[in-house]
Length: 161
Image (cartoon, rainbow, N blue to C red; front, side, top):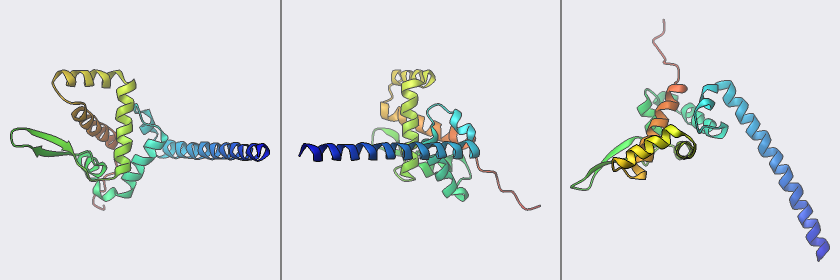
């Protein structure tokens, strides 16, 4: 019984090592792809190769729908939607769009909230204004979508000359 447990643990350790190598290989390939196609995206606080690839994939899948940064925000599911409860008017995020892109923006925002002093100052200022954390994150997601769009804006297609 003890021998079988040791063999099984050795096999599991070998498999973990193989999977770790494969993960590192894929991460390296993704980083090289982003550096080749949109290196400016990696300079943004909170954006790593995996997040950048997700956002580039979203943009690349639907280039004809990206006439403005507002259309990119809607595609990512971070465009504001007006809501009211009778006495109170407020905005919520669009529930539609690419969920992976929305999750990527969410990761960027939460990374910025932890490590970026400008974002932390913005958060504190908005809290003092009476905004909720959810409202602040919504605003930050929209801001990040705007920033990303302008960094990797697709070339405008003009009339043929």
